Image 1 (cartoon, rainbow, N blue to C red):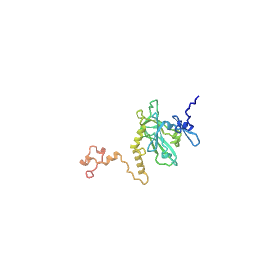
Image 2: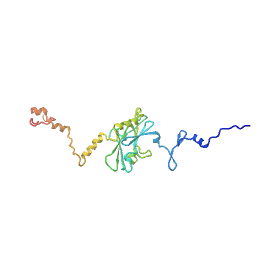
Image 3: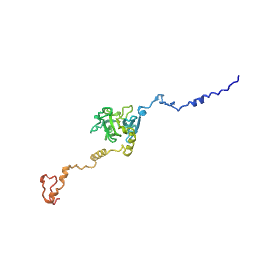
Image 4: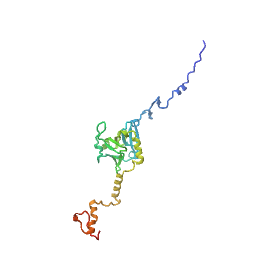
Length: 257
């Protein structure tokens, strides 16, 4: 009986090379990274389901795959920097028709929600360092579904990890959900959110003028007083006026006119 030569078995090293996967992968499954002590590090819910956009004023907008947005602070925000002054207050907008503390959302269509524009104020933040409150904007066009009322009692939670430091939950219009991130970046490029609004500029100028050493402001003159300062044309020309003492303008002699 003659011997039949069989194919040699592959060396163990060659077999291992044929089955070698990319580090951290098993087939198409990505394995979590490991911490220094050997425990797996899984991605957070925000990392798995949200796309995060950071604005020029260091606010963060986390956009879920279904279009819902979570508004908060980016880790780069000055309020969260090491050694920053402690946050002492978070005041949500409640001074006008867009009262976020009286926001009552009902039903599947979220009727009753307050609609905000990118430059609409959502909240103001104060710190133990004092100074002007720091405004936080809505950043996008959306309905405000909910604000984090816990921040009113615990303002130091703002921007903290663990899902407790968010500011507001926003829902853009259906037609705008898909492009909300691109719209935010374009707005921030053309009109940076770090720049103060016109109202804040005027308020700041008024405070600077009224501060010690500032320019003295002229007293405001009412419309009625301004009209009385003007000379009555009929009286100046003819010396008479059919309105007599009821005339809204000053009766000056022709020589004074």
